Image (tube, rainbow, N blue to C red; front, top):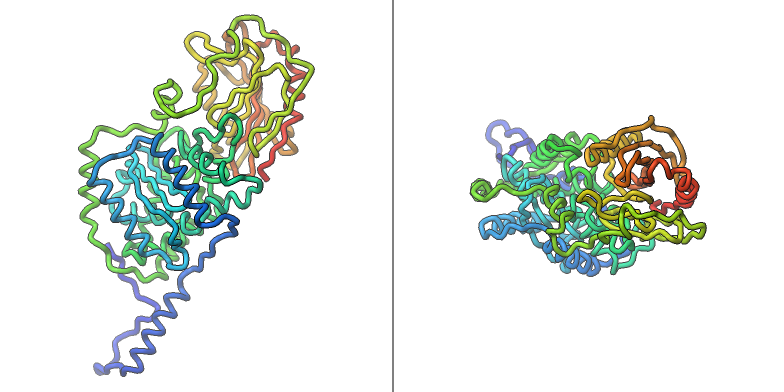
Length: 484
């Protein structure tokens, strides 16, 4: 529905049926144009050291990886609909932001999560769940316009510009890793790119507001009421699930989002609404398909080995149950990409997987009771933060650990501490060790600059804690974070 509002240049009818002169009409046209330009919020792209050609290269390579990993919808009705909608929004974009080098594409993904994302240079992916959650086409158009705004403003490579030291060749894999696997995927590639994807694909609140405002302007020029974007954000917030909606984890709410989008909409001239009959046709088409999987289903399949193209940790480091040697007195420094460095005993083996690095001694990691188990060692990782309050965010992370380990429980309250020069919290847990007896697990957490949680976890049988405590403490003291 097109919302008809009184524009800045509208005037009440003249008394007596007077007609404006040609000069008056010209003045009125100039006034309307000037008012429209003045009313629209100016959105300026942030500083960026990369070229548009490099955006295209990064996006092209990352999109190829996403297409290999994601279940895509290969249906001409759905494909053509997204192409028409996406190209309409591109045509409505500001000319000064449209780069001729960009390669736009609009790909439907067969996942039920309410999510969409765009990569540098133009590739955009829209989950089936996003389309099914929308009540009308303008809501889908709003999310796509928001994502298109990130592309036009080049926010992905602007993030990389702020995070010094990233090389072009590393960016594509890191961006792909950031969206594969529930938004995290394999940002670590053999331990070399740890955390990189979280910086590239997790937008700041400033960038989010820019995308909201520019997206609203694109919508209005394309014939869609920007208030539909605000309504879709409310729908996304209400998404059910154990954690926050996936889309909001990388697109944080700047605050008062609905209010400022609606305020912007009130200042914009909305073009005639295009024919949106294809929306219901696509909805019916999706409804006729088998139910879509969730991202969690995809991650479980990858973890079980049914996925292809994913790097996996070794099946074991020795054999669980065999004697485990004490930590070496010799240490070596290991880098987790550009995110952190840490010193670990020289006789511990590194294992990297989804945004996690483990360091374990011989016979400290392997299969036990049909599951891969770490009985001795440490783990460093990045996790989504459910809150900007460290205690609340840590509690959510702990709840996730407890759900995955039914025999584990909290053994003590949270205690404040310091990690890498930052305020941190330690939470003590205990459970049943795969090698018998009680297992002691200590979890230290702190915030990264992008709002995510960085954690350091230690695991050892209670009876061997005294042997490992000195090494655990030394590893903790050696952690250096480089995200600021």
